[in-house]
Image 1 (cartoon, one colour):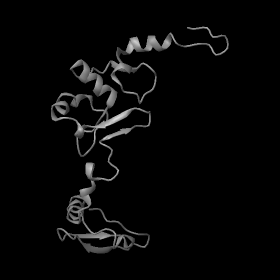
Image 2 (tube, one colour; image 1 turned 90 degrees about the vertical axis):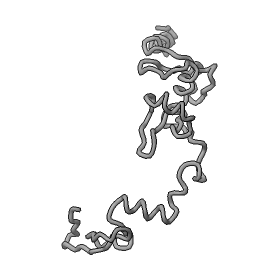
Image 3 (cartoon, one colour; image 1 turned 45 degrees about the vertical axis):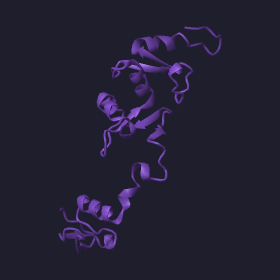
Image 4 (cartoon, helix red, strand yellow; image 1 turned 30 degrees about the vertical axis):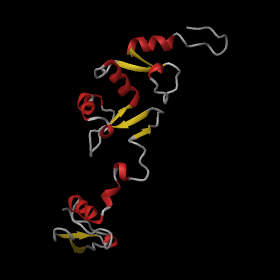
Length: 164
């Protein structure tokens, strides 16, 4: 472990509560840092019961479904059936350290509808333009090129109303 020194070079020696290893820390961290590593910290938190509030045990849990910044619903991979987790693992939207990550709900629903994982060039289009509306009758599977053409024909000039 590299030495951490304050401006005047002070360091305080503490011993890890789990393994007993000596650790030198800055004086302002005394009383805050009690372990030598993340692994020992995890052991301490597990003994204290702090890991019991993860996932469905957390009072803020909403079934592993939440909106992202762009307005799409995101599903936690861990709430999917085991067979679906294996089949759609390649469609992960974002990988997480504790599990397989997340998947966009509209892509997951369309993949289940067609019975296979979606390709990278396949896009799920929301017909009414509302990104959070994931009803199957509102979703359409398109190729990237077809999707671009569809939006291109809807472009209008704000002054004269000409469609191009």
